Image 1: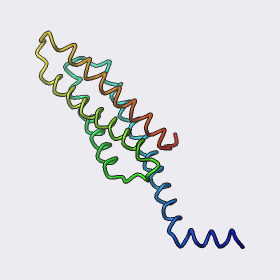
Image 2 (image 1 turned 90 degrees about the vertical axis):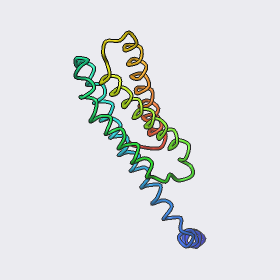
Image 3 (image 1 turned 30 degrees about the vertical axis):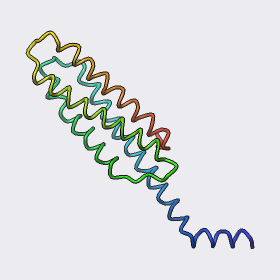
Length: 144
């Protein structure tokens, strides 16, 4: 009887809805993890291309990273997931911004001496952002 009363009180207080929100958030994190994997795979795939082709080849992956940021910005995490959500969003933003920097560097490349360090730095920032994103999504409970 006591368990039934506690269950009724929790239901009246709206806790099943909160559970649904957590479940929806976890599902959104799982979907974001799939998107992040696609972005990483696409980003990794440009490595074997010639420099002249890399900027154009990077465009759809940078757009996908930006779409992932938009998707994450549209979520409202439950309080226990706020920190990992913030880390995921930070990583996604860093990766997307760095991809756009890489596109700009590739399109502006004229063989100047500063090209290699700038592109290497931007690529490192993309990788670090994606790594932060992937780790945070795992912490947030995204299932693989």
